[in-house]
Amino acid sequence: MSAAAPLGSVNIVLAGVGKMGLALLEGWLKAGLTPSAAALLDPHPSAPVQALSERLNISLNPPIGKLKAPDVLVLAIKPQLLDQVAGLAALAGPDTLVISILAGKTIADVGARFPASRAFVRAMPNTPAAVGRGITGLYASPAVNQAQRALAETLLGAMGQVVALQNEAQVDAVTAVSGSGPAYVFLLAECLAAAGVALGLERPVAEQLARATVEGAGELMFQSQDIAPAQLRVNVTSPGGTTAAALEVLMGADGLQPLLTKAVQAARARAQALSG
Image (cartoon, rainbow, N blue to C red; front, side, top):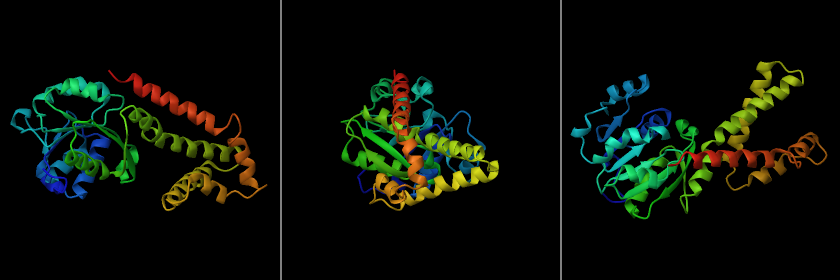
């Protein structure tokens, strides 16, 4: 298998086809994966997964003994279920690239369950992957060769952007910033709407205003890649105006930055606690 090999030629086993697993699968199919090259393993597949499997003739829950060692084994299960897929160890051979998106589980954790495998990638995507706008932090173990690294970036890039990490410890930071980050943004919209209600707006109107504001600001930032978020903020803040008055509160000593830093640190601590 070479770095230039088309995605359609890659044999993949996907263990766990929940929301993130399904987002991965749909991204791969859009990127040209041949449906017959994939095998899906999930004890409780959702109706959409079953329908997709039947429509495209994708193998769903085949007997493990009838599967050959794949080019790639992707673990998209819940972290606490890692021991339950240890039975897949016989499936992952020495040439199999194992990609784990299990929050908090280190390469050592995964490697202990797959002793025959040598090449491991630990990655952390986020939920906007479901609409092709996710971002994934990726760390590859030293045994991952150039072709496997390129393949991992192609597979994870099917859901959005990919950021290569310098060391594995950074994966927990990615989990705290972007992995959990969408919930922070949703909370911002929720709180902004609640503030609007407190000012006398009807709730549907306040929620529409908050949602559209977050959506629009995000899209503006997406289309302004060459402008730092701080500069975008400055661009919409008139000195002495209403936005400046609000930012004086949000940027104060007890404002958004220290609170968000504390929240992200708590998320990282939880990710670290999940390992082992």
